[in-house]
Image (tube, rainbow, N blue to C red; front, side):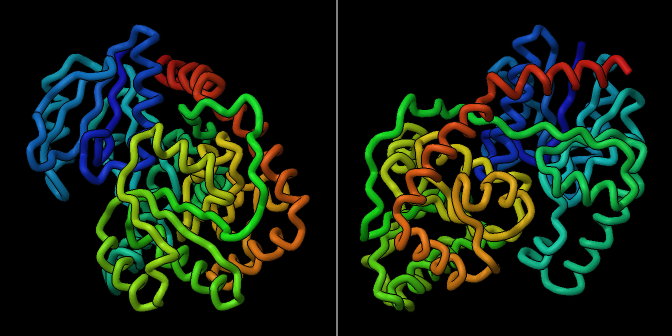
Length: 364
């Protein structure tokens, strides 16, 4: 069969993130089953118009406002596809209007408040309205997502069919836990694209909140992005340059080594489709400390595989970390539960179900 994924970015785009990593895993699995798999994405500086890797044919064209038209023009010159996957990131590709074949929509999270992180009023308000209207317009199209929170929001907006398939990870879980006493200085990490909606500054302010309560901690921030300059300024302003390291992008091996070493992964995003890096940390025997937002409350089970702060503030997250420091016996319980749960999210357990479902949609 022939499959086509429509996504604004592809894995080689400089702005690619977790969405592209999980999309690549699904499409590679389809290609390994012998299907023809295509991925149409926006172009970017220095990109090739077409190339093939990991068994997937990549086609790039256009940018914001023009890539949909280029996709349509390219699509009409191709042999028929059995399934077109329209990936939503705030704005969809409107594939049901022009693909003339079976169609599903793939969504990581409903942006909602994230619109305000990137755009000022009134654009942010228009974006939120447009997103809500789009979900209603797509109500008869099957959706697929990782989070039950996202599933519930889509149903509340009229979408009739939502398939929930959890994200998987390539990270191979440790065979056994290595000793890691919970002592100060508390070692923390953030692994994320440095974007406004990720609120990395809240992770930095958590270190400051801990310092204000005489708790020694050090935070390592892994990743790159548009807010790096602002973060550097904030770190200097708060007087905690000795307590925060911006490590940039790391190799998978180096990232895993860091996650094995730290006590907690911090995640303070506005909203997530799931929280892929939470499970990667869990696979390395490291619990997460997260905000109580959609997606993160599913990837981290409070007081089981990690902690969820009471409210979305650095002070609340710091209080949660201090509570664990005061009961270090709970930490080992979290580590054990997190590691065991992470095993079930390896791609080898996730992809067969996902591919079966996609093949079924192509035959519908």
